[in-house]
Image 1 (tube, rainbow, N blue to C red):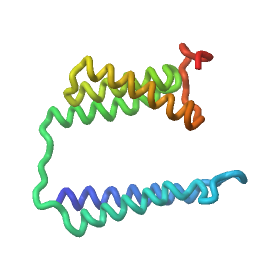
Image 2 (cartoon, one colour):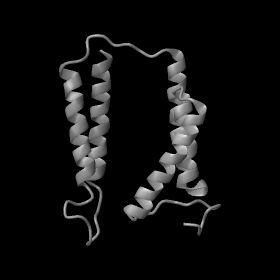
Image 3 (tube, one colour):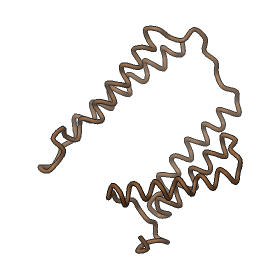
Image 4 (cartoon, one colour):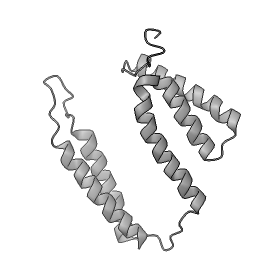
Length: 146
């Protein structure tokens, strides 16, 4: 039953997401497909997956234990905090902190979690900022460095 509830709720969210995409107005020099294409395509794929849940739900549903719910709630708080930290701290620092926290929350070894967080953050910054020429905030502390 919970698969059907999740499928129904997610379909409603996907429909709202797609309706919001129809309000996008693209500039004169935009992609030929327009700004609406990706959100609508994602919405269609999500709806298709949810219809599969409605038609053929899993036979048994297992709910996580209380500590897992607590970790998931902390992840939600961390995602919101990440959004607020991104501009003042910069992409590399904020992403390193968030990545390390997520790794530690799901029982990653502390040293490896921090090293992986730093490597991922620097590599992601290099990819998006340098290779793809996209703007990522550098933070007030590192402004003008790169």
